[in-house]
Amino acid sequence: MIPLRDRNPTRRTPIVTWALIGACFAAFALELSVTASGGDRALEDLFQHWGAVPADITSALERGDFFGQAMLGMLTSMFLHGGWLHLLGNMWFLWIFGNNVEDRLKRPLFIAFYFLGGLAATGLQLAFGPGSAIPNVGASGAIAAVLGAYLVLFPRARVYTIVFFFFITAIELPALAVLGFWFVLQLFSGVGSLGADVNSGGVAYWAHVGGFAFGAAVTWLFFRGRGERRSRRDVPPRADYF
Image 1 (cartoon, rainbow, N blue to C red):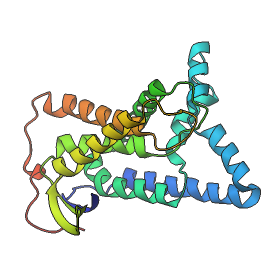
Image 2 (cartoon, rainbow, N blue to C red):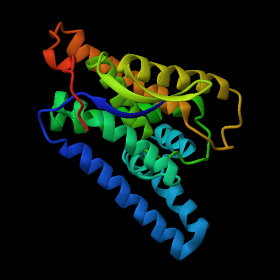
Image 3 (cartoon, one colour):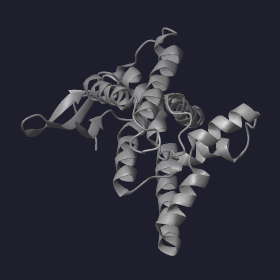
């Protein structure tokens, strides 16, 4: 499934979501500059220094170094991406689903939620490969937290989606189906990756699972778990919003 857009209007301009997208594109422009001047080796060094390296984080935690470069990399890694497809795929999901979550959480809380979701995602990935020397880069863990929040807040919001099933078609599906399918796919992929060489690289599926679980759990505790009544905005009107 590839979501194209949702029918879920917002009341506020999603300034934080736009800023995060802009920051990721700016960081990617830096990556291109580094590659142009120093080649792939220079880019690898950039990832090694500013990415989230599980082995370095594990070592830092054992030393009690909670504010060093290894821990800082857990934050800066959220702005780095491994290529155009990696960047555009992440930014597309953030563009579609981030504005509504920002609208509901309000901007300051959304900023904290986004980065805490990214840290939770890195934490679960670290638990499944604490000795890996491969740097983790990408915003997908933090964005997965946004997806988890969206699922809890707007399960019935309609999402116009491309579906691949013997044929290709575009239909409207509830967010529960689109994001639920995405999470199950990440979970099964993560289970399938167990036992693989942690230094072989690849997709950090457990970061996706960790971020999504964090986002869904925290949002449920703050909204549904506290008995907040669902507003009429959770059931979008019959109109198209682009």
